[in-house]
Image (cartoon, rainbow, N blue to C red; front, side, top):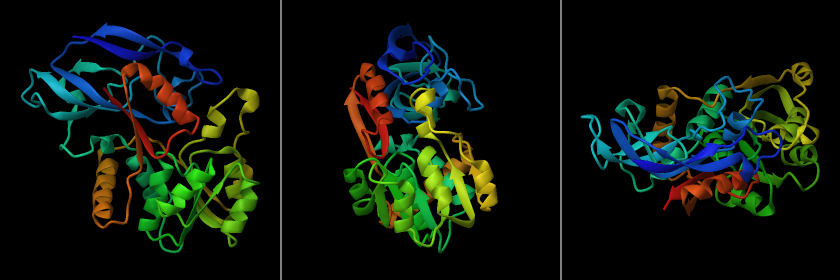
Length: 327
């Protein structure tokens, strides 16, 4: 079967542009053939596209398909495990069709909104519940709180008993969204004044947990307002990933964290089946209780529209978990 796919044209150095991607026509064949219905977008993909990738997995190479999470429908099968019409998830990436052994596809329960399966819930839950160990009385700060991970992490903290949850975002509209729709107790626009001043205003007695996806100035603000013994769940550092070397924020001040008695707890976004199952169990319960909102942005378009959607995500154009539903 002939398909179109998005390949990495060149590994990224500095600011990512459309020139780093190309639409290629290839042929796919295998035990199972799947039509992609929806493909995932996440800021963490940027690191895997960089020439100086620091994640301990193989970086994506030029001339190869961008291999991210996708939801699709089986259109041909020679396997007793999967039938035509089954909904499946895989890491086959930005492609109209994929093919391969049945083992590379996970059969899913049909649900009204299959985009849920592309969300970053396992990362948010594992980081907040297991890494940071959020519980009763905690004062939590989440950076990048309107993004795919942050929009879930703050709600998870509230469900786990945090006394106060504060988020940062990049616009007044996103600040309102955090408080009015996602249940954050307070939020601030990190463009509006000094983050450390805003954080001291909103958490006068200091924070006990920081869930970080941004790094840079917001990490420093969290450090200056952290109580002794605070836990920092370090999920990402988008501020240091975008732009050239001259535009990046400096590396975190680990010596200052040690002096303040702050636990720095970096963690991986690659999850075990147990971690995924724990998230799905809690998510289902909280959703049924009406105390949780699943925030997402679904973009409709063709496979050729995916790179621009990815760049727009990096620029903060969307809210919640982001995916492209292929037409």
